[in-house]
Amino acid sequence: MATAAVERSSEHDRASLDVRPLTPALGAEIHGVDLGAADIADAVPAIRQALLDHGVIFFRDQTLSQEQHIAFARHFGDLEVHPATPKDQPNPEVLRIAHGPKSKGQENNWHSDVTWREKPSLGSILLAREVPEVGGDTCFANMHLAYERLSPQMQRFCEGLTAVHDIARVFARRLNEAPADLHERFPPKTHPVIRTHPETGQRVIYVNTGFTSHIEGLSAKESRWLLDHLYATAMDVEIQCRFRWEPGSVAFWDNRVCQHLAVSDYFPQRRVMERVTIAGDAPFFAP
Image (cartoon, rainbow, N blue to C red; front, side):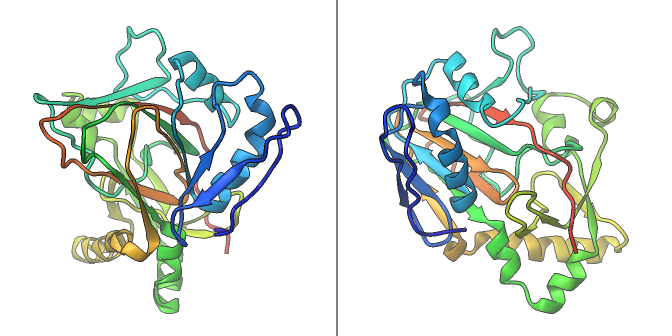
């Protein structure tokens, strides 16, 4: 990922994109952009390039309606509907994540989103509606740099492996459904342990604590050891960035290269977020 700021101009208003990297590893804030503007399509190529360069990008002071949130996300691809979304809500593309005095946050583990799908998401666009006075940050990790820090021997070993990803590991309890019932709709899927990013060509560790159940072809003990070793790579602070939310803040992350962790340190304060997720394609490894 590039660490230098990227500047692009909108053909309509000629305003440059002000991209300010957060860390050398990943993350950048983009200033001076209204994601709900009528001419936002002019800035989409530059925003997409910033996403590829930095892995996760952030915007402040956005006043988006749900419809504007959805419209912005559609510039980057088709949208997903998450099974945790209530069936009767008016905008099914919006996943509302709300925690407060009666609901402590449960997203405090390193993970990539919806890896239990055959085609996991390209990325997610998360909008802060209500945030605690302090706490509730989100951390991100660059899993390409995590791969680069493996020994060459471990890289080669992992590149030949596949792992199973299972929705029931997290959502059987949250949705109050039996694993067998969930599997009828969302069967466990197999993905390479090391995937190739389809746009940058980077190699990325693609297992996560939330949804990966085991590595195929290894004994249970071998699988658990290797998964724990790979999971721990996300915890290296030198490949991370951390974002402090404000009302109207937006995070847009590339789910193909990043893992993230929502820090649940604000209980019993309220934190209300809305997420729109862009569909991706099937992970692959290119030798």
